[in-house]
Image (cartoon, rainbow, N blue to C red; front, side):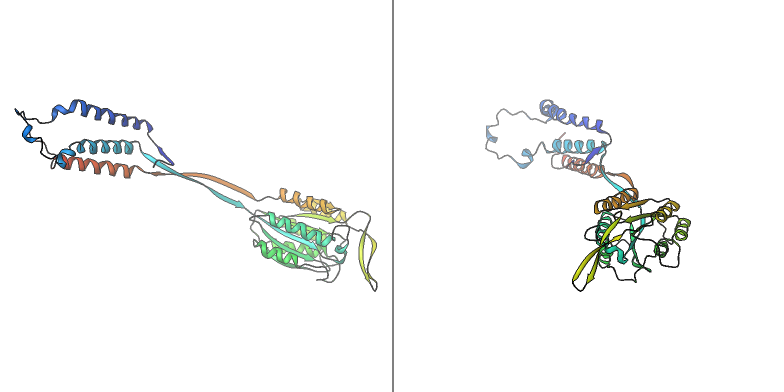
Length: 331
């Protein structure tokens, strides 16, 4: 009955102790108030059946005590509280820009650079909750594989469909950044970022990477750049009439340009030489770019005394009614 109930005036409940005292006084001292008539002998009445009125002669005082108890509880002002939290999020818009040029098939990361990147990006997306994320892929040209969305299932399915050879080979880093900026420039998110992963040197496209970074900075977009590939040479699969053969090819990543891009936009540059390093890079970016969540706690009070007050008045009216009718005393 009193689960999750508190009383605004708990001290009033001490008056409930009056009820047993009043009942004690009634039974010990109040009997003299009953009207009595003296007879020389009542043997003639001994076989008279006891009436319901006589059996219920204490009903008025019981009703009065119940009414008193209910009214005391009402005066103590019982309340119930409902509490909760208002959660407001300050989301982040993220453009994942992924190099899918032929060099991304090198197998210094397992199973290769492209598939390793797809696995880590998938884990990154799975860990987000309220951020809009888009996907841009590039080689000689750049195009949007998935616009900004919070439907992560769609995004992850489109990520799985990415393969090398979808676009003519080349590395257009400037175009890729420009495409990412186009995805983000109209966004009203508090934070907008591009995560650019590549393993080469800009050799295609109409937009210079540095100019693209300056445009991104104008729109307040931060760019994290990732150079993926081991140092020195990496095994690259080559198809021959005798099956797939591997040849060692030099790893050429324009780290200076990638560092400058991230520096212009107040981002960071990372180098991933193996699968674990790539995973740790995305984990670090994930921590750096967390959605801001504001939680406001609230508590609402609901007054419960109405039912107790109504019940007390009802029992009081019942007591007054039967005391002046069925249990009316003779003068």
